[in-house]
Length: 122
Length: 107
Image 1 (cartoon, chains in turn red, green):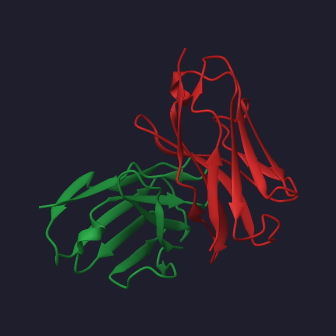
Image 2 (image 1 turned 90 degrees about the vertical axis):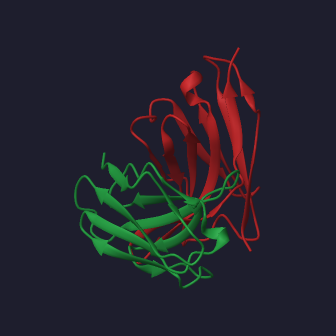
């Protein structure tokens, strides 16, 4: 059974960088069938896809966030990470990491972490 | 971006009822439409993918249909654990986008 777990600071100051790591257990992040994704959820914007990464390092980002985000992968640790620069209060959200697979052509998030609430405040 | 609009935003039903939730895309997404539900304090859980394929382990009382711009999720014989918020998600094009959610409450 694949499990994902987010970790990182829960409180970030405005203008600083939000950094989160997702640790994958029960399966290899190098499995060629999957991408790995970050998704966030806030009261104001609902569920928002942030971006996805393949074990090779190929990334896909949401254009609305692309200028401020970086997603990276560390296959030796079975982890992938998210950095969001220059955060503001609107970046306050529950951040989820998830596994993405191709289900009959549809890109689907089948396993999710429990989520971590990150608050941007001074 | 493709906008996903769900209706209704909320509904109330009783255990044993049959309910239908609708998701409409701002442009065709073919059959690249997925459904999730989310219980309070938990992560979303995949129910249906590619419009009508039931995810492994999900009860058969959940079913999905549709293609193009209009999709439905039907839940037959509602069980207590089904009272949650339901989301659709398109994967036809990036950015991947979700509907705003439909909250299903116990009547």
